[in-house]
Image (cartoon, rainbow, N blue to C red; front, side, top):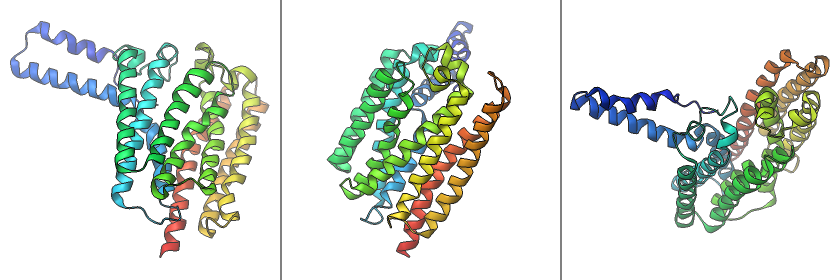
Length: 331
């Protein structure tokens, strides 16, 4: 969730000229107005969400057989990745502006508040995606550009426009969009896609349901009010907790595969076991609490919040462990 300024701030700025302030104050007001506009457009890109995507992208670049990538290649890949993901997020906000207005978590977004129209958000999003393609083609490689574009289409068309409002499988199938950045990083550094890179894709893919279903448990009423068929709305909270546990088990098993196939060493294995153990413990506790409480298990929602926050730490730390393990092999 990106915190943006309240809708009342632009209104106050628009009323300033009526007071006939001195020129110096008026200039300052215009400057602050532009700062708010720029802040809104940055908010359209969802910087906090992108930070985790870029981490998986960068980590993948450092664990390919090609060795450590050149700094300029990492830089251009990060720039292109931010532009493409930011463009996809802007299109997502434009398309979902109607349901975002009725959800507390998203009601302050620029498109929800009307500070940026859906049309301008679309234009901005597609412009960022186009610029990203230019960056990838000119400074990285064509394969990376194609993968980034596939991620854009996956998120905006397959997830946002097709799955999100139609089926509770939206998160399960739509998780592929967030997993593509790992492929982008691998392709940027090695100019190819091999089965180890698909393993990274699978790890992020199976991480997505436990992560977002924990959020959905916290915001169940929001999703119900917006008529978005998230799993807690369709199947109930106890079933969602059970599904979180099942996917968490699969995720932890999958996270051990890089060491099992000799791609990672003992350092990564220890980290994956420790991180996975905590994830499973929190998922187990969540299931027990939702199973034991009533149809409105308010007491269990803090546990869902803790699992949600930990899942962010889990994925970031898992990819950092990969890089550290590979770095020790270079020494």
